[in-house]
Length: 289
Ligand code: FAD
Image (cartoon, rainbow, N blue to C red; front, top):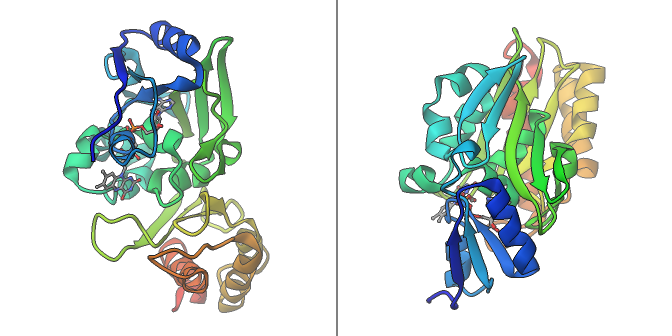
């Protein structure tokens, strides 16, 4: 299918982009890498009046470390994250996860800002930013505001961004000594969206700081706070792991679709948790499947 007619403007600055959004209201759409937006247009799921292409705003791309925080511009491509020594060193969870996004052609165009703003519940990066306690910075007509990742994802393809706001960067605490992560996904074929996936992070060697996020399970990426609390209370022993898997029942709201039933997704969430525990706490018994 072909996209419906739309106007197009390539802007050179954030102010120009904000002015275009203000002029067209809900009729405008930001165009970043186009890897989700263009298919949605071609399928006629969306019919914006105008696309505001932010690919020419140089300030929106790049990766920088300052004061223990990694700052990633919204237009930074998945392939740049994949190849970045700073990301490999300071946010290894992101370096691992980004390799699973589609195929190289998609990663060469798709951007981190686009992935978070699109908020596909099966996407890898939204769950990673939840596990990493990232801050998402948006700019609107009245300036910048910072949104905790845990407040950003509201529902299916729904975020805290207003129609007049642009996601400008993502701020992530750089990995501390002793930090460990786990990342696993289950997809029918490499490059497909996941049927279920997990991104987990422990900022120290114990379970005290453990954050467990799931993707591909429900209508948005979800933190499994009950499972993390069970592991804090019982450690990553067999008893702790069993309690954590039980806690997933209250943490997650799995959904059925053509790929998997809700019951299968809940089962896979437990399998993924055991795999993550094996990576995070290799000497503990809780990672045995
Ligand atoms: P676009 O498509 O340009 O935009 C997506 C949405 O976000 C639009 O609504 C747009 O208006 C909005 N937006 C973009 N940037 C901003 C911004 N800075 N501020 C505010 N709003 C913004 N993704 C995965 O996560 N995992 C996969 O396995 C995967 N597989 C794929 C397979 C195929 C065949 C294809 C075509 C895509 C796949 N994708 C996958 C999607 C890909 O990762 C996209 O790059 C990503 O979802 C969106 O990023 P984008 O830069 O292309 O955004």
